[in-house]
Length: 263
Image 1 (tube, rainbow, N blue to C red):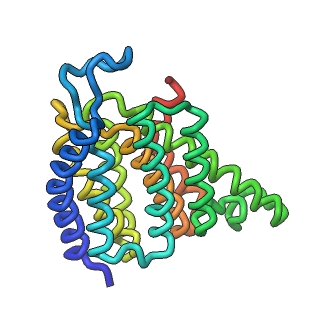
Image 2 (cartoon, rainbow, N blue to C red):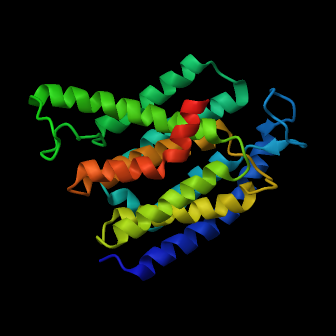
């Protein structure tokens, strides 16, 4: 049984692990020249070279904390991390070499394909409370299309919104807090995963808040969006009222979604 003590421990330990992992990520970034230099693009106005260590710290802290609390045993959790590693790898590639948008899209689609093949997929059209009942095969195709659109949209939305110190990781932490409070009342195993991610977001925010000493980079921002989009699918699977659940998720993610459309 999941208790509040376990959730508090998950938040606290993940926060502690992340604070240790960030300097490790900074060291790797400096050794490998994973640095965002001022003026390297028109929209970059920071005043000193910044290590893009956020994504590295996120992956390492999540691997350590997730293993310690056994979150990978949850069927809907492990696929998000496995597929997320592909997003992270392509994001690192982009941070190093500035790859083309088409190649980034290939990496995102590959990650989504892995995620769906491992069983994490939207099933809103197959839900009995959906207002239109479609034939089974057509409903499955519609769910696949919506899953791809959702995953691509949220992943890129968080990448787009990563234009201010602390904004992306701050939104991520707030959404994790909401999901944690929601899932804790149902004693769901997903609550521990949310607690781990919330602790990690708090740790990274400490270094990314204004004035930042690290950046997330594409690797970090895309991974955050991907994990959140995938987790929201798993979260909705745990609720009977899918229409209401999707509405609450859309409200929570309103800032990055609106920002994406404005951009």
